[in-house]
Image (tube, rainbow, N blue to C red; front, side, top):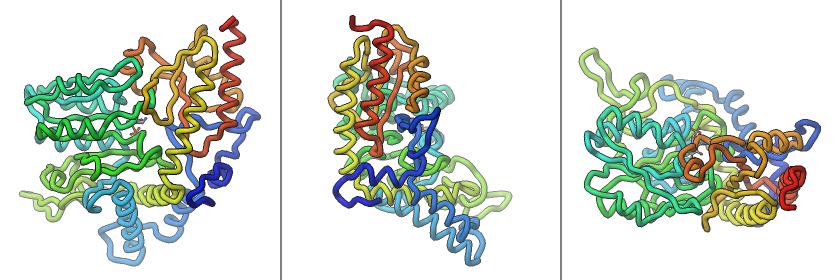
Amino acid sequence: PSTQNVFDVQAVRRDFPILSERVNGKQLVWFDNAATTHKPKSVIERLSYFYEHENSNIHRAAHELAARASDAYEGARRKVADFLGARSVDEIIFVRGTTEGINLIANTFGRQNIGEGDEIIVSNLEHHANIVPWQLLAAEVGAKIRVIPVDDTGQIILEEYAKLLGPKTKLVSVTQVSNALGTVTPIAEIISMAHALGVRVLVDGAQSVSHMRVDVRALDADFFVFSGHKVFGPTGIGAVYGKQELLEQLPPWEGGGNMIADVTFEKTIYQSAPLRFEAGTGNIADAVGLGAALDYVERIGLENIYRYEHDLLVYATRGLSAVPGIRLIGTAAHKASVLSFVLDGYRTEEIGVALNREGIAVRSGHHCAQPILRRFGVETTVRPSLAFYNTHAEVDLLVSVVQRLARDKGLGR
Ligand code: PMP
């Protein structure tokens, strides 16, 4: 990137080849960042470099390319650890993404610590990836899921959370940023309230790491999970952070190569964390690509990103709020990146189609978060979601198309 501490959005945009793409005869406007983000050249080139110069399986063979691949892979683990503020690289497990990460914790920590009559607390905001794994576990062991309600702005109600916490609570699993509404939850308070009762907390960081500085140690998170593809890295790679003393106590999840120290037909001795949780050949190249993405984000600076995006979100909120017949859902005081709305007289997919015609990519649907949309009485919304490479001019275009749709139905007259 061409910026140090001053944020130059046009310079940043030149780092992302796909932003020059034309769709339907129009310049692409990417407002689907909550679904996935684009990749800077440095990430794309890092992947090519790996396959051209380093490609090998890791940890096993003793030859030059195996050493290069292992160094690159373990170097990426170090970058993830530093990015999250972990104490040690041994606290970072590579997984496919947030979904696999939550399933990993459910199948290890969950099976070990959650039993009949125990309770798992989630919030009303959760993505299906932070609901369904707990339902599967609860059904298996006879545990119960309790849900923290949100207020009419889409913010978690801490007083209600306090009432749910109790001797039966064995885990709290809550998102840091809602993918459907953009709410930034009071995760530090959520964690300290749980810890006061000795309860462990998993933070779903899928939507937070690309928008704000995360420090797992400052938060005192027990587990933290995110996906590479939402933070300008490749698909198919993500990470679980777990406090070392916790990971060391957890049983393995998947069995196979890499995760063992010694195998006989009678008994297997497992590796210690994190290798114990990385059975089989992992996504080596994409882990390395994720490391390059985190380098990129650090060069831009999360503080710069946060400031710029906050300004853009305020601008977009103001623009869309002025459209007659629009209903913005998710109006919490503390939000990141996401706008979610419905418009009188339109099905949400019609708005998606109209925007796509203008080259604007948004998601229209339930965003894999049906419970929170139903809390607001809708099944689907239109969801423009921002990243630091979006511009005020792109927001103007979005608002003008939605304005035109409203006018076409005679709204506001
Ligand atoms: N949690 C949240 C808050 C998300 O936004 C997402 C992705 N939409 C996920 C979990 C699941 O992430 P992935 O599909 O990358 O596993």
